[in-house]
Length: 193
Image 1 (cartoon, helix red, strand yellow):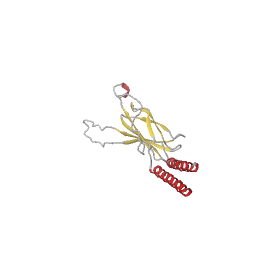
Image 2: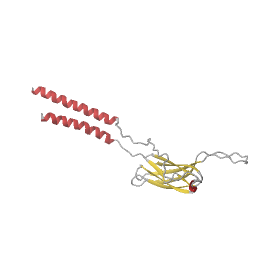
Image 3: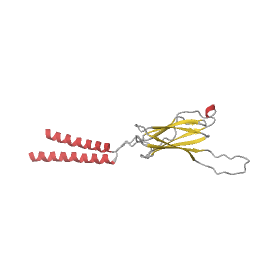
Image 4: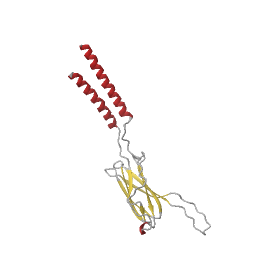
């Protein structure tokens, strides 16, 4: 009886350890996130664009893209091209030992700026937007606050915490091993009887 219980316990533990090892083998990278110190500022202000989730020591390329609502100047009679989005700055930085970065970006004209950071090695991308509003500092416009722009990573944002196919396969193999152990114990008991 002791041998039977020992065999079943050993087989069952192998099934669950195998499933756990299969899920631990897969990498579990933290999603990259980005924030700005202020989401609405006045022209000429500097914001701090920072992010986490990059490879420690990785080079990060940060770009600032400017988009403004098109305006028509009355009485000029001259039409000019409308620039929908224009890259106004590019900055290189390196992630610290924890995979974080921070860059100061000065934003000049009123409009909407999109700040994008791309990890050169990992390919992770985070973005955030900042609105430059001349009325922001007077109290007449939208007040300043913490950045809550589109914090998106290239892999879809949220980490995958569910069961995956490798874990299911190891679990199935463990169940089969448990069944084989039970069958071998039953056969051994019949031979002894």
